[in-house]
Image (cartoon, rainbow, N blue to C red):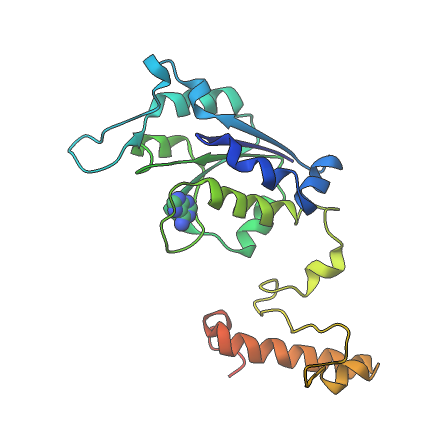
Length: 224
Ligand code: ADE
């Protein structure tokens, strides 16, 4: 997969791309991430990329031309153009899974007050990472990239993906490691029993209990 990111703050991605699983996925050529500065695409004086909104109001709006030029330059036949915006569709695991099957993503990150509305005409998907407003789309784009890249075939061991939260509409079960007792807190007996069927039953029950407790919306009336 190739991911092209358009941003006004390319340095924000330095650590993200050079640590842990994302670094390994890049080193193993599972993904190539190119960070582009939107200012490199402007033809306006002083590298201008934004301006005041027509009709008044605070903040600056990203202009059409630098973004249209960038997309013209980067877009191929099979590209998906994603705009990070708090007014987009709320991102979730099933969207990450769908995106992980694509060959080329282009991710647009706004800053300040957002984008000229006409930019949406060249966007396939508007994504928000949640109901809060951040200073820009850079952190949201990293959230999307992280969750998508780890789902690319061969990046993470399949087994660890199978039971993780959201895959089948349930949260993950609780895990424990050594020691078996810590400050008076004991690991549930069943996990030490070696009885695989009982362990699987216990884990499923824990997933249902946790989901009911923390995210009843995911159950949508099931398991009642
Ligand atoms: N830009 C600012 N806030 C955002 C959010 N919550 N999701 C996506 N992009 C954003």
